Length: 358
Image (cartoon, rainbow, N blue to C red; front, side):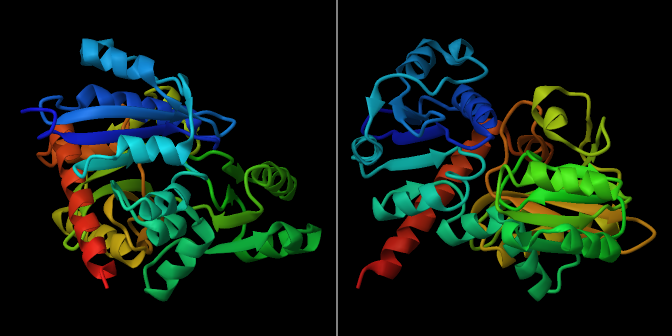
């Protein structure tokens, strides 16, 4: 296949959020899995200062073979202007962008808005779906409107937080409870608080990441995850189960080691497995998912059943990440998963252009 026939895949990684390292690892493993017979690759890295770089070292490594690509890319290389770099990289009509950015300034609708203005196809949820999915407070409000069961929660802005409101939340939700920045992923800034003093300390920590904080009841139950893929007719993978090595599935478990157990498929009854897969699709659709997402649940077997924890509209693709593992167990290999995501991006872009061509 000639260069003109291959799809030009533009990978954006890095970013200014606390999840930069996750993004750099995700991008590396996606590049390792890309079928170079089908794609040409341009890699653009965003550093912690927000500068964009043409990641020449990553592209040179890929030219030598997937084994030469490091396990973590560096957001370095010649500095380029963001809009110019993207316009140049996507000059071919057969271009698709993979914005492999996690957290704020990437997974929250910001980069998606830029890509919409540039009129290019891109993988993942659109502006609205990305922004709602990133904001735990808003996504929980939307799920509540759709009647989807979830843990009890309360969201407050920094200006509303004081000793009295924190005491009210403890009285409402009980202890222990979780304290989370509303706009952050990968369990960054998340704490489990067992006392009022711990709630205060956890809130102070969470406020270093976001001015909106979500307080959530602690659930005693199993942690079940489902991968969703699609757009107009999304499909759910087999369910998987996380058995955390720590008190909850934290950043260390997710990305720095393999101490947590990932059970794929999850040991569920056929009825429960079907139910959680259907629920995952409902959550995906309610929150305007596109392309891909991982939907996380708590499972109270002898209580309220499945409770939606959150959606992740750009889940990690590292070797120990659940999303690719779930699809592999469902019969879709890593390279095939990338192919499908690219196809979905192209289809969505075609629909978008049709709907705006007036």
